[in-house]
Structure formats: C-alpha cells, structure tokens
Length: 518
Image (cartoon, rainbow, N blue to C red; front, side, top):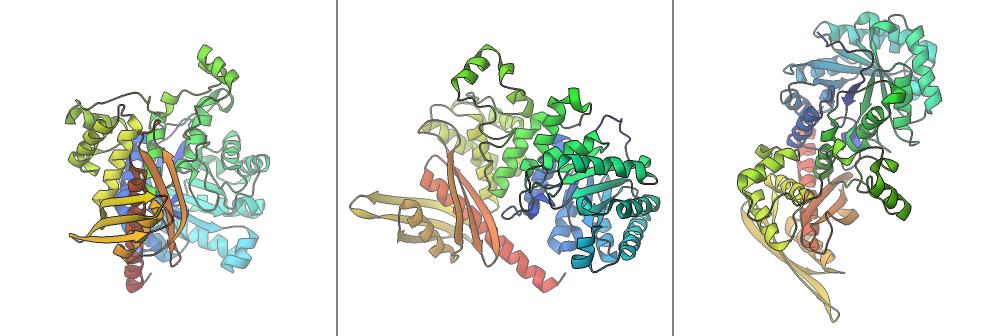
C-alpha cells in the first residue's frame, strides 16, 4: 500500500532519467542511470521515473535495472494507453520494492486533432481502459493529462473523474509546452480539485516545462493551490528549455516555508553532489549563473554586497552553501593522506567507491598532490568522475604530445588504445587542440561535427584542473563529452574521446534496435 503523507508534505517526483534524458546530448547508458538513481535515493526523492519501458529494449533494460537497484523510492515507468505499453511497463518494474506506473494521454483539442486523430470519447475510453488494466496488477498508478494547460477544463475534469474511478491514485496536470503562467496554472489546479468527482481522494501533481522560464513559478503556484507532488529534474534538464529544476523548487519550499507552509523530504545536502554527478555523466557544465548550484550562486562581486556579507551573511545570502552540500573548498587531503581517508572523502562527496577503480583514482590524486599546492574537494570530484568515465570506454586515451610556436604550425601526436592495441597518429591544425582532435579522428575513424567546446577552471590558480566539455553530432545523433586534467590540451582530448565513446555506444545500440524491432 502507498505510504500516507501529511497535508503539508510535497512529494518530489524526479524524471531526470526519463524526461531529462530526452534533452539533446543528455543520453545515459544503463550504468550511468543506476549511478543517478542511487544518488536520487541519497537525496531522498519520493519517486523516480526510470524511463519509458516500451520505447526500446534498451530503455526497458534501464528501467528494470534501476527498479532493482534502489530500495526506498517508488520506481515508475512511463506508459501510453496501449496494451503493449502497459504490459511492458508492468514487466519492467516488477522487481521494484515499490513499483508504479505512469500512464498518459493528451487531452487538449490540438493534440487530439493533429497528433492522436482521436475524438474526446476515444481519449476517455483509452485512458479509463489503460488505468483499469494496470489496476489489475498494482495499486500505484499515476495518470497524466498531457498538455493539460491547453485543455478544456470541463473535458479534462471528466477524464480525471473516470481514471480515478478506475484506480488512479495520482493525477498529474502537465504544462507540456511551457505555455502557462502562474496565475492561470494555479487556478487550473484549484478548479480541478473542486470539480473532479473523487478529486479529494488523489494526490494532484504538477509537471512543468520551462519554455517561458516559468516552470518553477508554475510548480509553486500549483502547490499553493493544492498540488502535493512536483515532477522535476536535476539541474532542470529536459526537452527544449528543460523541466522544473528539482533543486530550485526544493530550496524555494525550504527557504520560503513561511509563505508556502509545506515541506519536502529531500536531503538538501545531497543537491550539489547530485548536480555535479549529472553534469559529469552527461558532459554538460552547469551554467555559472544557475540558481542554487551554479558557481556564482554564492559569489559576491559588488563591494557593497561583500561588505554586507562580511558583517552578516544574511544581508545578501538567503541560503547557506553547506545546506545544499557545496564543498567548503578547503584543503581536505594532501600527499601524505592515506587510501582510507581518500575513500572516506569520496563517500562524503557522493561518489560510490564501488563504481570506480579506486586504486587508479587514488594514484591520480597522489600525482595531482605533487603538481598542486592545494587540492580541493572539486579536484577530487573531477578525478573520481574522470576515472568513472574511462573505466567503461572502448577508446582509451594513452598520451598526447603537442608543440606550437610562432614560426611553425601547431602539431599533435596522439596515442589511443583500442581493443588492447595502441594506435598512433600525428596531425597539424589551427591550434594545439585542433591538431589533437584531428589526430584522434584519424585513429578512431570517426569524424563528427564539433558543435560546442567549452573550458572552465575547476578551482582557482594557474595550476587548477581544467574541465572541458564538448558536444559532437554525427548522423543525427548528438552526444556530449567531458574531461578534466591539469593540462588543458589533455583535458580537451579526454573530453573528445569520452564523446566518441558515447557516440559509438549510441550507434551500436541503434543498430541492435533496428535488428530487434520495436
């Protein structure tokens, strides 16, 4: 049976692994999804939407593995109102400790006419049938009216009443296109709660997209009008402009409880580790001005602000960095630190030592200690995540040699290991990074378009680790890569090799799916 919650409790439904992954370049493999799911469990989210089981064999396997990997959250699979979808979803989550299914169908007239080619009666019957079928096998059923914010409220109320009668326990009203503004979105929830028969027996949920930059505001408006579940993603990733940002809505509830009068169960000290882990896995850096988790979120440049913060942090800081798990940026370990201290610090930073080659990561840490005077928490995170990336890659970067001068064209010699064999290539280019990338393309036989390349220093100083992220595109597929090293050319090479590994995995997976069929 589903756990009961007090009236002032808002459940956090995380869809990073499903809706978040649909963002270009954010594709994750099964092991990466499991790593995110375990971090979500450490965050203490209430529900994890693990994927869309019927969409492909790969997604089915990911949902099944995630369902078997976490103990506390409810694990859901998304499902259309089709028999094969419902059955695949139920099968994928059957080993979950707390299994659930999330069934959806569009209710707006524009979707009915142009996407579904269905009548209102067709939609009502399909929704009721799918919920009733799922109800034969489990109790935890969520139903979503896709494009609710552009739907006729009276028709939507009729659909909701019927799915509640059929067994739905949670009803979700999504702003699928990011079309709503807070006043009307909140009013919609108030209307539905009071006009749907049985509406007092279910939990109302909000799922917002950020096309107008209002996803968090709309979610908070829904809560103020009775919603007690918010569907969101780490770092706000998702289709188009993204989804509701989990960290923003959670910290808004915590910081303004005086106004909202509700709370979530999220362990906010795990927010920053979750943000960093996702960023490392998908190879997309967090924008510096991103609320809560961006590098500038707790930075003060203006003299007046600095003076105020020095006198009392509350003058310009409404949250404490430690509340979201931001590392203190102090020297935590040195070259005399032992392996056990290193492993313990990894755990404190949200890294599961079992997911990486600790011995290699520790050796890299020792080497970094010899190069840098000060080693920070962010340095350790970067080393651990770099090792995690390399441990599962088909292409392994062994060495990079570069040379450049005013009188000679930049040149790079690169060594990459493929299937146990070392391969070498040299190339010139418009700069050392360009020469390096051309040599890597020659070795791997891949030559995607480089759509984005960015560099940032993880910590301060000329001896800082550099973090490079890149986005490559080939044959309609976009993947991201990331690398960290004290040498920026090496970091660049690591990022590209990481992206090419992802591209190869995606290509091989697509071939398998084409052979197996839908």
